[in-house]
Image 1 (cartoon, one colour):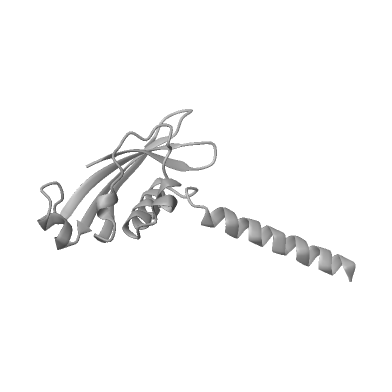
Image 2 (image 1 turned 60 degrees about the vertical axis):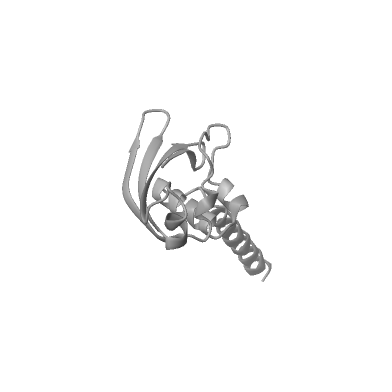
Length: 131
């Protein structure tokens, strides 16, 4: 009987650990990291969005104007390259709300963005954004 409880306890601990590591983000593919980042920005969850950024390398302006304005995220291209240091580039076409593109000369209804990512020891991190 003790063995059953011990095995059940170990299984529960493993399940909780797995769910915790998945929910922290950043561990997926470059496409998933960019999509999760943009969804967090759109939701105004900037603390969560920053988890997908390598703050030591990030050189871009944070796209906070997108908060609540992203209607569609379409990953158009993703490439991974490098030996020793893994890097990736992800192209995205965003469909943004009329409120954003009509009030700004920077944004268009379908806006193309590029993301550069680098793989750290455990996960992919965004290092730069080009608009």
